[in-house]
Length: 588
Image (cartoon, one colour):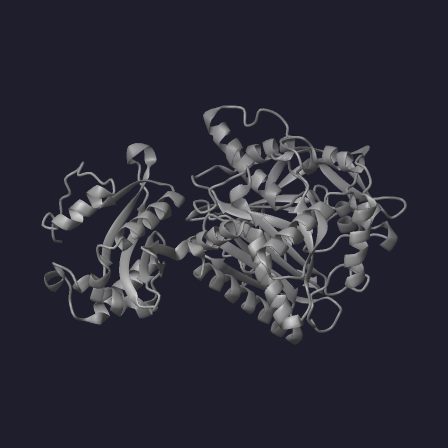
C-alpha cells in the first residue's frame, strides 16, 4: 500500500461530503495509555491525525455508507471515546455515545485543491480533544466514490486503519446481502491499556539499557546524527520513495533468509552502514513496536504501539538481528515506569524515529491495489525526522518527514539517497539471482535497456532466428519499453562470471478466471548462447522461473515451442511439461 501525505494525495475533483454524527459524553472515566497521555497532553493542534483513502468498488448510496460507518463505530470501543481536559491539566478519557448523523457537503473554494479542502476538514474534526476525533468523508466524482477515513492518532495506528477499512467494506457487503455486519464487538483498546497498566514493572537490566541508550544520545531520545538546521519546528519536507518492486523485494528477502535474519534486520544493516559512512556513529533511533501481544487484539482498533529504542553499531546481519530483538524486548515493558527518571519521554529537537510495517504478515488484509488504497499523513511543522517503511506484495516503500531546511535537505536527503542505493544494490546482488550449474556460477537479473542488443543477438542465434528476427535494434528497444511498462512481465538475462550475457527469457504472470481463478506463468523467449547449451543452464533457468511464478500465486506454468524444435520439446518434456493442449497461432 502506498504511503503518502495529504498534500500529495491525488484526489479527483468532485462533491465533498462529511458525515456528522450526534454525540453525548458520559461521566465514566477510562484508563489512558502512556502514549495517549503524551500525545493528547500536547493539546489541540492541526495535523495530529492519520487517514486512509480508498475507492469503493461499486456504486453505493451515501445512506448505506453511513449505516456501515455507524456499525464500525459500534464495533470498536475506541471510536466511542473522547478526551477532555482534566482539572489538573492532564487529559481524561471518557465514553461517548454516538447516534444518527447527517451528511454535510463541504464546499471546495474556487482555486482550492480538493486535497487542501480535505486537509482543512480533518485538521478541524480529528484533533485530540474533538468529540469524536474521527471523520468519515466521501468524495463523489463521475468515476465513482472515494472514501477518506481519518482519526486522531490517539485512537488509531496503521494496523487499526486497515481494520476500519476492512470492517467498513464488510458492513457495506453485509448491508447489500441483508446480513449482520459482524459477529460482535471487538475487544476494546481501553481493556488493553488496563492490561498494560497491570503488568509488572521492568527489571533492572531493562532500565539500565534504556539509561545507557538515552545517555549515549545526550540525555534525550535518539536524534538524527547529522545537523538539521534551526532547532525550532519548521515546515515539513515529505519524501515518498519506492525502494523495491516485487522482484527486488523477493531478492532482498531471499538474501535475508540466506543470512538467517529477517528482512527488517537486513534493512537495519543498510541503515547502520549508511549512518556509519555519513556520520561516523552507530544507528540510534526511536523504534515503535506494536503491543498486540495476543491474537484477541488483532481485530481491535486503538493505538497499539509502544516506543522502544534501536541501537545498531555493526553493519552485519546477525548483529543487526540482535539489535532488533533487543529493541522489541525493550519496548515490551510499561514505559511510564521506565522513563520516570526523565519525567517522561525526554523528547528533544532532532528526534529520529524509524517505523517498519510488513503488511504481508498482518492478519488483516484489504485489496489495496484494487481499491487504490493509500495511507495518508497530515501536514505539520516538525523539528524531527520520522521514517516509515511499508512492505507489501508490491515491494518496499518508504516515507520520510523532516524539517524543510537547507541542512536537513542535504543531510536527510543525502542519507536517504545512500540508503535507497544501498538497499537496491543489496537486492541486485542477492543470492536469489545466483544459478549454480556444473561448478560454475551465473547471475540471473532483470534486463536493462543496455542489454537489449545482447538479447536481440540471442534471439537471432537460433534455428528460426534468421526468418523471425530483424536487424533494426530500434524495434527491439521499442518493444523493450512496452515490456517493462507492464509489471506482469519479467524480462531476464543471465550473466556468466565474466559479466557477459549468455541467456535470456521473458516471464509473464497471467491472472484468469479459469481453473478456479488460477494464475499461470507464461515462459517465452528462453534462449541460451550456443557455447553454454546442454550443460544445465536452461534447466536452472526454468527452476528459477517456476519459483518466480509460485511467489506470485501461479499454479500452472506453460510454454510454447515450434513443432519442428524436437530438442526443445524433449527438454521441456524431461522437466515435466506435457503436451496436454493444442496451441494455435495466426498472424494479425
